[in-house]
Image 1 (cartoon, rainbow over the protein chains, first blue to last red):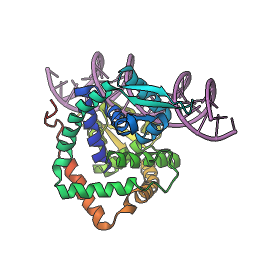
Image 2 (image 1 turned 90 degrees about the vertical axis):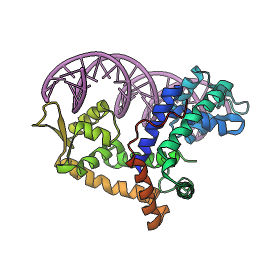
Image 3 (image 1 turned 60 degrees about the vertical axis):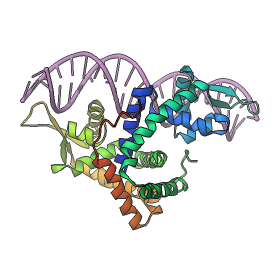
Image 4 (image 1 turned 180 degrees about the vertical axis):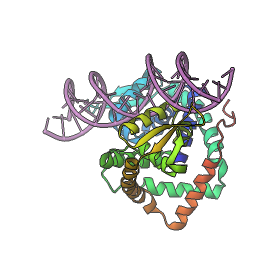
Amino acid sequence: MLQTHALVVRELDRQLSLHHALPVREFDTLITLFNGPGQRLRMSELASRVMLSPSGLTRLVERLERGGLVRRETDASDARSFYAVLTPAGLQRLDEARVTHNAVIRELFARHFNDEELARLGTLWRKVIGNGDSTPSPAAE
Amino acid sequence: MLQTHALVVRELDRQLSLHHALPVREFDTLITLFNGPGQRLRMSELASRVMLSPSGLTRLVERLERGGLVRRETDASDARSFYAVLTPAGLQRLDEARVTHNAVIRELFARHFNDEELARLGTLWRKVIGNGDSTPSPAAE
DNA sequence: AAAGATTGAAATGTCAATCTTG
DNA sequence: CAAGATTGACATTTCAATCTTT
């Protein structure tokens, strides 16, 4: 299982970096923002969703901001907090990269399974995510 | 799917590092060597099995060697090549760490499934790995 | 020249410490 | 003081260049 995971992520990163100069981590961050309310999320919330430490996310958002794909805004209700917001350029880049993303997933992964198997896999994975217990982990949804 | 795997790997790394000072990458390398013929593998072969670049593996083996868990030997038939060999100390450390490894996998993952589901997952994953497709179709552009 | 492996430089991520605000 | 976020120091990994052997 760990090997399967590593294989898919590696190839995804290779293709996204090659065709869109957008490593898989950055891609994941953009798509997470896209799914957030108003295409924005607090830094801390974003960090836990993309499984990065707070400092790791700060640095990643710095890079995205330099590339104009994301913008940081202050929170009117709490001056300690910042929002990361998807910019129009970020949205466009995400849409382009999604084509490659989907192609890789299909080619490397989905291709091996029929619809019933895919549905079953989805169900099984959700069981794991939905239940974070055992040890107090800092990052969970 | 990517999130599920990321979650498991993160927790595995946390627990192995905490209890055995053995990050998941090192653990993976030891167990791969353990499964090799004579508990040894060529550097290049080991690199591809643990999904590390050649240079990445060189440095990882350096660390393991410093810790006495692995030893490097020359190859009599080809002076360019080196073998990484599991030492007795490495085997013992691996055995200890396996307890933690199994506990985490069971708690975080296997616990959610019955035997039939686990068998099915194994089958599905192997389908993906079995295909060493390095360059998928350029459906992106 | 090609293959196996390593080294230097640079990118990315983490932990601990710090700064600001609640 | 606690919470959100950032910064500094450090660890790990990769790419490109290099060295040795085939």
